[in-house]
Length: 137
Length: 251
Image 1 (cartoon, rainbow over the protein chains, first blue to last red):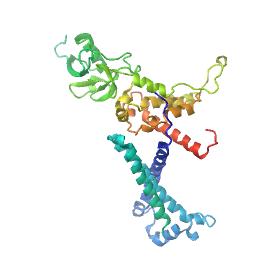
Image 2: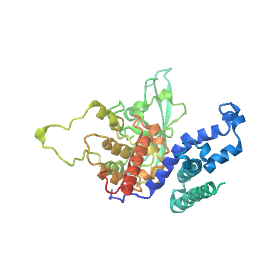
Image 3: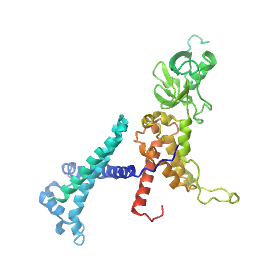
Image 4: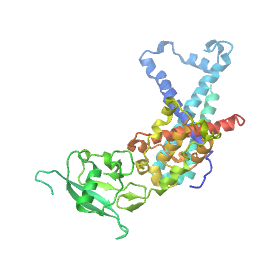
C-alpha cells in the first residue's frame, strides 16, 4: 500500500469524543443522581437545600465557597465550568457516536457533509452552554 | 455407504468455478454425519466421496493455521472448530469469507490482506541495532505479557469478513493488521513506534474504524482487534496533542 498522510484532524475530534465519554460515563450519572434521586433517598437532606444557597454558591459568595476564603473566587467558576463540561462533553461524545451509526448504515460516503454538520452542532451547543453558564445569574 | 440409522445432514455450499462459468452457484450435498464431526470434516467427506472438485483451504484441523475460515450460516467461522451438531439450520449454508474476492469455491484472494499486514510494519524496528555477538534483545515475562494477546492472531481473516467498515471500503487497514501494529507498539524491544504509528494513523488506517466490534466477536483467538484499534487511537491522539502542545518535548 502506498504511504498515506498521517490524519491530524480526526484525532482532535476523537479526543473530544474520548474526553466526553469520560464525562458522560463518570460525571453525568453522579450529577443526575445528586440532583434527583439523592433527595428522595435522603442521601442529601432536602430540607437544607434551598435555591438561595445554590445561587450564592454559583455567584461565588466567599462565605459559601467550599475551598476556603483564599480560593473562594473559584467558587463561582467551578459549577459553571462543570456544566459546560457536562453539556459540551456529552454533545461531542454523543454526536460522534451518532456519526458512526450513520456511517455504518451506509452514509460513510457523506463524510464530508456529515462531519461539519454533526461536529458543528456539538460546537454550537458547547458555545451556547458557555454563554448561558457564564451569563448566569 | 451410509448404514441404516446413520444421521444425515444437508449442506448447501456456494460454488464458483471460473474455468466453467462466470456465475457462482449453490450446490446441495446430503452426507452421513456423527456428532463429533466439524464442518471441515463434512467438506473433506464431500471431496473424498462425492465431488473431488470442491475447493477450499485447510491444513492443521486444530485452529492454529488459520486457513479454513468460511462463512457458515452467515457468520465467519473456522470450519475446523465448528461442530455440525451445534448448527441448528438445515441445510447448513457454507460460503466463502465475505468482503474478499473469490478465486474458486470457498477459496478467497488473500493478497489484499497480505498487503495490509505489511503496511502495519509488523517487525521490530531498532534505532540502535546491536551487533549479533551481544546476543538477543531480552525481555521479562511481564514485558511479554503486555502484547501476548495481540500476538495470538493466526491471520484467519474472519475479522475482515465480519467488519462492515472493510465491507464499505477495501482500503481500510482493518482489524488484524491493526492488532498486529499494536502488538509491536507494545513490544519492549521495539523502537519504531513513531514510524509505525505514522503508517497506521491515517484516514484509511485506524481512524476509519467505527468500533462496531464484530471483529472481536468472531475472533477465534480472542485477540480483541477492536480494543487494539481503540488503544492505537488513544496512543496516536495523545502523541499528536503532545506534539502540538509541547513541540520540543521528547516523544
